[in-house]
Image (cartoon, rainbow, N blue to C red; front, side, top):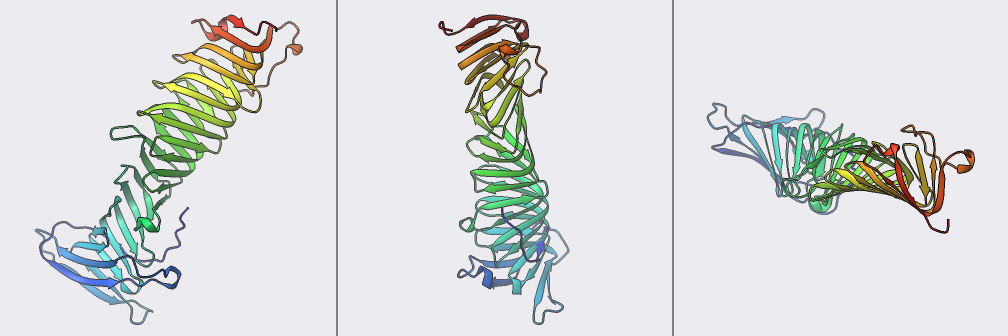
Length: 389
C-alpha cells in the first residue's frame, strides 16, 4: 500500500487554444533530506499561453507567502497553463507554483500525460521533491499499455516508473480491467481502495464487488493479472449461471474472453439448482457460461447432496449438462445414503447408514450415480461399486 504523507501544495485547470507564449519559470528541483538520492529526475517548466479567440491575456503574479520570509507563490492564468517535467506534461485552466517546495498545482479541466498513462481530473498536484503526482475530484486514469482504467475522487502515483510503478486510488474507486486483448469484456470492480501494479496487475481491497456478464462476485480483497486471472480472498462468493462457489479464497481463470475455471480453497462449497457440494477444495470447469464439471477433493471428506441422496468420498466429481446433473462419482471409501430432502444452505455432515436402519445405503471404493432427464431428486437410475463391496 502506498501511504499518502504528502505536503500540501499546488493545483491547475484548463482553457483552450494558444497563440503566443509567455515563459514564466524554469526551476531545477532540489531534493529534501528525506528524499535525497542524487539529482532530481527532471526540470519542471511552467508557462501560460493565450486562449485562441479570447480577449483575456496570459497573466502571472508572484505573491509573497505570509509567514515565509523570502518565499513566493507564482499564480498563472488567463490562458492555457502548461507544465512539463521530463516525459510528463500537464495542462489546466490555472496553476500555482511554489518554487521553494518545487511543487506545481494545476487547477480546472486538468490533463496529465506521460509514457505509460493519461489522466483527467479537476486538480493535479506535482510534488517535485518526491516525484509524486496526486489527482483529486473527477479523476479518470487510463494505462496506455493495457487499457485498464481507474476512476474515483483521489488517485496518486510516482511519475517515474523506475522509482515505483504503483498507482493508488482511495475513497471507493472504480476499476475497469480487460481480461484479454482489444474487444474483450472487462472486469468491473468497485472497492474501498484500488491499486495498479504496473501494466500487469491490479489489486482491490475492502468490500470488493466484481461484475461481468458471466459472473458476479464479492470479497474482502482481490488480485487480477493481465492474463485473465483473478484471485479473491476473505470468504469470497462467485455467482454465475446456475452456480455459486465460495471458500476461504477463490481463483477465477479466463481464456478467449470466457470464464473457464473457478477454484475454491479452504472450507469450499458449490451449489446449483439441485445440488450442494462441500469439500476442502472445489473446482468448477466452465463452457459457454455453464458448469460442465465439478470436482471436490482435499484433505478431508467431500460430501455432496442432491434431492434425498447424499454421497461422500475422498473425492467427488459431478458431470452436468445445461446446469443439470448427468452423473456423480464418489471415489475413495465412498458411501451413498438416502436421507430426508436436503434444505439448501444447511451445513452438510456425512450421513451414516447406522443412524437409520431403514434407509437405502451403498458403500464401496467407487460409487457412480446416473441421473435421468427428469428432476434430479426424483430418480437415481443406476449405481456402480467395487464388486468386492
